[in-house]
Every structure is written in structure tokens, then in C-alpha cells.
Image (cartoon, rainbow, N blue to C red; front, side, top):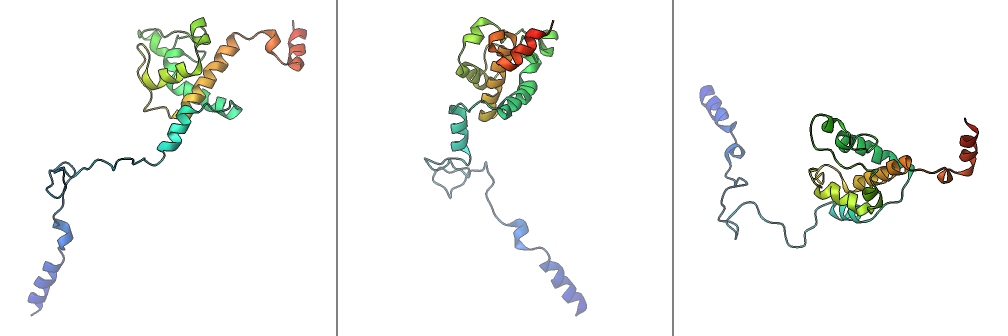
Length: 173
């Protein structure tokens, strides 16, 4: 009797959930009209966060110290290997034999609008490949703001300096 109870108990340990019938993602399935398991989303479906990403991609944020700090951080990660930290186009990749990108100090790029830089990040430009999958939309604008700061740093005039700091600069030999 004990042996029979143990055998019955052993048969109960394997439940039906271990071997239940189910469809796998890439199998054909007669259950659905398209005869496939993976279904296209319902028309008009918006993924969570897409509306915010779209807004971030189209609206230029106000330039703040936080935005510039984020831009510098992202620029150092994604842009400086080719463009170097000053934006002159002499990054470590160039020193290893890759094509030299244009300097951000070139008059053509200084005259370009901000959208040009965002589009270059998203779609690539010349030998530069797209960074759309690596750089979030809000960070693209931060990088552009930092590029503008780099451009200003190399082409600043004494009249651009506020009066209080200008007096200190004029006193130094």
C-alpha cells in the first residue's frame, strides 16, 4: 500500500503546466487571421514614452548650466573620439587613420543652424554614422548647446565678456 501511495505521489509531481501546448513567437498559428503568432500593433498605437521623445526631438530646450553640463558629458562620450574635446576634428580616431571630420570652428559650421547638428547626430553625415539609437533626443540638443559653447569659446571677443570680468581681464598683463 505504501509503495502504491508513493508511486501515485510521484506521478502528481509533474504538473500539466510543464508541458502545456503553446505557440512560440515565430511559429505559424492558425488561431490568428494573419496565420502568425507575432501580431502587428493596433493602428494608432503609441508606445509608452514616444510622445515625450517626439516632443524632446522637436522642441529646442532653454540653455541652462545643467543642459551644458549634460551636453559636455554626452559630447565627451560620443563626439570627442573623432572631433576631440575642443571640437577641432583631431580626435583619437583621426590619429589612428580614420578620416578627419570638419572642425566645429569652421565658418560653415559656425553659420549652420542647430537643426543641422541634430540631423547629423540622427542621420549621420559623411563618414559619420547615425547615433540615433545611442543618443536620446533630449541629449542631442544638449550636445548641440555644448558645441555652440565650444564655438563661442574659440571666437569670443572682449566685448562678449561681462563688464565686471572684462575689467579684471584688462588689468592682467
